[in-house]
Amino acid sequence: MVRVVDKEKIARADRESRIILDMERDERTAKTQRLREQRLQMQAKLPVAPGRKAASILTKKRT
Image 1 (cartoon, rainbow, N blue to C red):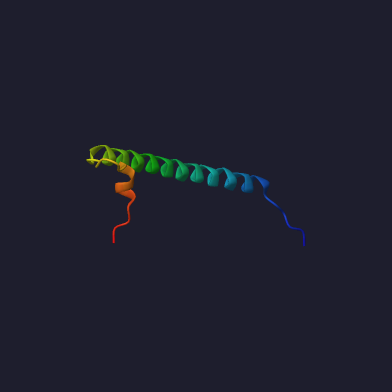
Image 2: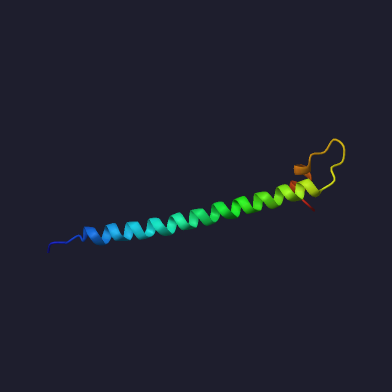
């Protein structure tokens, strides 16, 4: 039995999957940028005590 490979079908599937992966990557990048901007805005709004960095206030684990 000879197996026939439909190269056009494989190429089409590759193109479609690449489009979807690119869209997902763009969405993740946009989300990361949006969250980074929110974090920076929060850091700018927080009063910082002398000797402490704003980032350490936000990243400190709460118990």
